[in-house]
Image (cartoon, rainbow, N blue to C red):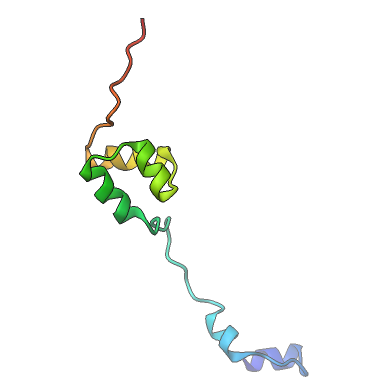
Length: 81
């Protein structure tokens, strides 16, 4: 902190904030707080719409989680005619 005194001699430095200044944040995305609950609901047989209404997670995220778990969606795919 002495280097600050040569540039800003009258500055008041809060040491608590200075200690946190260069901390490295973990890389990557954080997990959704209700992810474990969503997985339990998927395994229990809930539909994507029911899970979305209960936990307020988008259906896109629910479908991605289904793909990761290898559990197909309840709705059968419609074939193009």
